[in-house]
Length: 326
Image (cartoon, rainbow, N blue to C red; front, side):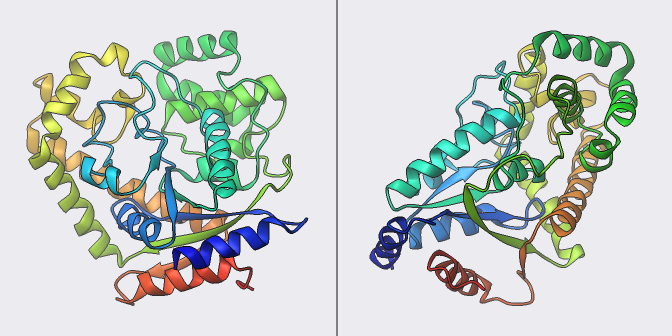
């Protein structure tokens, strides 16, 4: 199988109209994207590129649901554990790094597998979005927005974005201050909406594999995952983040971390905080599914309806790489 795909890559790369072939695995949290990505990478001569905005940080392992050290050794993983806690990481950074990795993998006849992450991160790759000239954004604009967040909270940022870029306000996660700040930055520094998907030339061809499940089963998987994280040491990890929250600006707003802060402050019981993590994770899963269903061309596979879905996915990827997915 590996040699078969390598030969396909070599033949395609000689064509003048060749576009890099990329597979992306998307879907709601806890549905099994990482497990599928690992199996496909092993069988199809691939390497994994994490699309997750939190897995890039060192020391944030359990709450971000990183693959285990053993799994990370089985297949090369990219964009995992590449940043210190206090480093900023934007969608522009992700786009630049991911494109470079994907290009390199293709040149070495490897199948790039983008696994997980937010819809906007993936959109930045698929649509080659113009996100401005600097990956770190305009420092003065950012500082003004950070100050505004401290003074007025998320609602202050929401008000600005709704006024200056209503299109972005309707599409991005407006409960996430990092997304709000970045959207306002892009609008003010480039004059374009961060959701503009028509400002980049096509550079690669993507096949989007979407995993889904019956709602109740998915919610049970989410609840089980949170319980498993606690068994693995989530409380110790979050306590470390809480004690060093000044140097963990990203993590303190992440699901699985922020909900436990009231427990360490003695304001809520552990059970109520864990229930909050489960609730927020379920809401996040719903938003993820809605975004991918409405905004992208995804080939969906229900993991409960067809127990053989992994083999079907594999066959469809082979067709895609060979140019037969019409």
